[in-house]
Image (tube, rainbow, N blue to C red; front, side, top):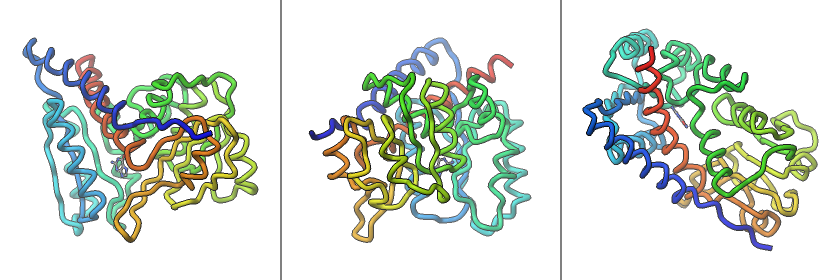
Length: 285
Ligand code: GUN
């Protein structure tokens, strides 16, 4: 068996096309375009690429962006002052603080300062809490993107064994909450998990968000599983790869996401979707 590929690029394009039409219609009704403020502190090359991609994707669908490229020496206090200013600015609908931040800045403190209704990444404790209560508002982009991909292939969730590898606040934990809300029996694996191969082998739906090449062995995967690779790692030769031993995993799975062209484009598409939702939420205030 060779698994079918879950084409994140084309699913993301469909989402972007729908958003473009929605925003065009809104502009015909003289509603302002949503505006997203993007803050990048320092010169991390990967972050610069992500921010450029987000900027382009926004322009492409008709979302206005306000980019802040700030020096890596910026103080936490100055960053907090900027976030507070953007929170108050009624013309700004979404605020994205690109991670990682330089070491002298506490990311948790900065994210907690965001107005939850402008938190288009869904990282604020309010948004994570709402997801945990199955009353989501702004949902973390990558896990939400994974759910949209799985819905697109007609994945069933109720009663399925879902295994998430990685327990970060931005992917693993919210991913588990999404799968739980959808009716899966969820296991979260992390650095203290004793027998990773055994846990992975139970998964009808496997989501790996570790960031280590070939970390998940193909032979561990249950026959017929749906496998989602959230890892994006640049190899020394410049190629991108994910967490899976892809060729071997493809022999076991029924559905599998490639890297690149899998989850990555979905994260950006959901960011755009969240920015429009943020504008709508603020309109109800
Ligand atoms: N760094 C890596 N992924 C992300 C993301 O989805 N959002 C932000 N803000 N920073 C990131």
